[in-house]
Image 1: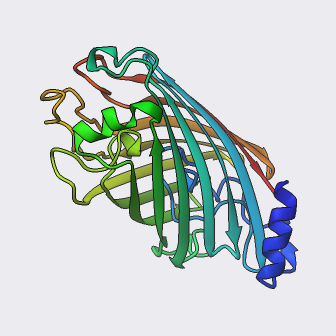
Image 2: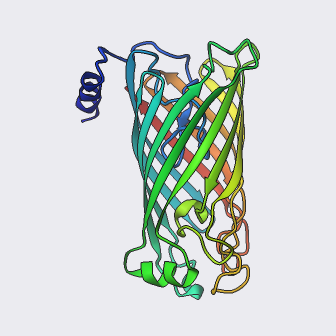
Length: 296
C-alpha cells in the first residue's frame, strides 16, 4: 500500500522521481520512537529515506523496547518530499501490566497517536560536511493519548490533558571525513513521559524547553554506534498521587545501527528510561531496544 501513496504524493507535487540513489547510507538517520527521522529517542535535522531534491521517499518502521517492568511497541511511516519536508505518523502502545496497581491503575494500557511535520530550513548535512555549517530543521509533533476507560481516572486527578503538541528545532552536523555525526535538538513540550501520561500537571501547565543530544560514529559505511540523551520535564512530581510518585527522569541510550542496503536498517540499543512511577517501582527502568526500518 505504501508505493501507491508515494506515487500519488509525487504526482500532486509535480515530482517525477522516487528516491533512487540519494544520500549515503545511514545519513538519513533511522526512525525515532515518535516517527521522525533521527536517532531512536530524538529527531535530527535530516529528512527520512534517501530522497534528495526532486525526489520523494518513504519509510516504515517497527520498534520494540522492553525494560524491567514495562513494554513499548511503536510503529509508523513517514514520507519525505524533495529532502525538504517530512510528514510522519506513529502509534505507540505502552503496556504497564500490573505495575501501577498500588496507584489504582491496574492493567493500564496506553496508546498514543503522533502526527509529525518537519521542515529543513538551511544547510545540507552531506554537502556542508567540510564546513562548520550544520543542517537545521524545525518541526512539530502533535500527540493524542488513549487510556480507554481509565482515561478520566488517570488524567483528571493529575490535572493533565490527553493531547498536546511538541515543537522542536534540530541542528545536525556531519563530519564526513571523521565519520562523526553530532545532533542537538531543543524541544518545547508539556508532555509527561513523552505524552503517555498526558500533558501538563501539578508542577506547571506551560511549555518547558528541554535539550536532546545525539553523538554517532560511523565504523563503516553501513555501521554506526552512538549515544543519545533526552532531558524530560517533571510536571507530575507533586501530583495528587503523592510527592515523587510520578517523578520523571531523563532518558538515555547506547545504540548500534546497521544498514545492509538502502531498503533496510536495524537498530539495537541499551536504554535507560529512569524511574517510571518510582513510588511503585523505585528501580531504574533499563532494558533493550530493537527497531527495523524499511525504505522505499
